[in-house]
Every structure is written in structure tokens, then in C-alpha cells.
Image 1 (cartoon, helix red, strand yellow):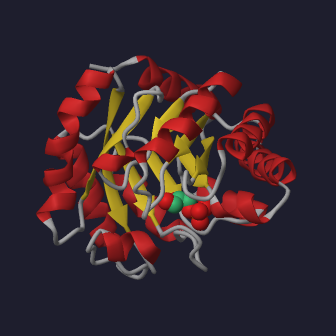
Image 2 (cartoon, rainbow, N blue to C red):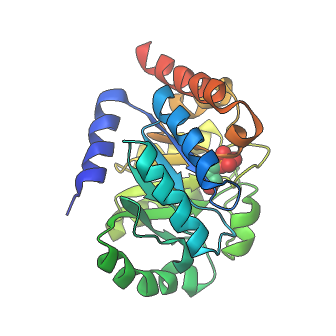
Length: 251
Ligand code: 1GP
């Protein structure tokens, strides 16, 4: 069943082509700094705030950050959990994700079995997502015991994405790893888009307007950026990324 956050995302993708999401790592912010960043993100055109990090383990810190975000912004807050500790009742929705190229059943289905009753109890909207780590992979690939798909094997990424769709997952995430040197290449995104009909999310290492253009022109439906907003004056950066994203759809 499609809930209100998913409907909002799909409608926005339908009208705008590609949307931007700002990722907040609850371990790297205070409730106050997270709210300031999220307000900037909302004002500059981010469609949603995602909250999560590969090594987050404090639910009380997560609660405080998301509670503060909820009081500051109107756009949806979507959890991006690394584990069961990444769930808080203060969010709107949660990427209900399976790390498809993990060798560890815990990240494929184990954590999800533990998390599902909590999600139900909190009334969070689950957004079924196939999570695929590509390229360098970064911290998440080590923590998630994944074998990242090399950039020169796009057909493997496409096979993973198609499997996600056939499982009934309604989004696919191509994750290069937070803070990596090279974002997902256009060629890989293009091949994935040519076989799947579900929206494709792309993130990891996106820092510049040029990189945004490459990802959007290859067909990404959702772009996620996190690190670059911590390194730079966030509002300028988000504006630059969102403007480049929108420019691609005006051509
Ligand atoms: C990480 O894809 C996201 O899960 C975002 O990566 O922090 O490099 O923007 P960055």
C-alpha cells in the first residue's frame, strides 16, 4: 500500500523528473545544527530530509535530532537506518531496505525482521528499498559486509536492481558510499534505468553541480547528498546542486 510520503515522492518525481534529498548523520550534528541545515535544505528545494549514518548507535541522540527537525520543517523526514537502532518514532517514514549485495543475512533480512514490529508500533511509513553498494563502497560496505559492484560491471548492478523490482521493492538505491572520491558513473545509472521501472536513488560522493548533471542526465530520480553539506556553507551548496539538477530538466 502506498502511503502519503511515497505518494508525495512519486508525484514530485513525476512533475520534476529528479528530486534532491539532504542526508543528516545524527552522530555529526546537534539537534540545533541539524534543524538549521534542514531549514536551509527546505528553503533551497530539497524534497525531504534523510536521517542516518553507517555507525550511528545512539537512539536517544537520534530521537533528539529528529524531534528537533520535526519542529523546524514541513518536508518529510525519512529514516535511513544502518541497524535497528536507527529507528525513531519522531520521523515520518523509513527506507525499509535490504542490502542486496551483503554476504551477511543480518543485513539482507535479519535486522528488518527485528525492526518491522517497531516500525509498526511507531506508525512509521515503510518505503521498500533495494540497497545496492557500488564502486568504492566506503564505510557502509565494510559495516554491511558487502561486495561492492565494480563500476566497470554495470550489468551486475542492473541485475541487482531488476531482482529488487521483482521482489516488489518500490525504490532502488545505488550507493557509492558516503564521502567517496567518485560518484556513481552515468553509464552504470543508465543501464540500471534501462531495465527497471522503479525510481532510482543515487548517492555517495556527489559534491559539484557537474556531478549532479551527470547523474541526472543518466536518469537518476532521487539524488542524495550528505558530506558536502557538512564541508561547505550548506545553503549555497544545496542551491548549487538543486539548480543544476533542475536545469537538466528544463533543456
Ligand atoms: C551516503 O549516499 C549517501 O549514504 C550520501 O553520500 O555523504 O558522500 O553525500 P555523501
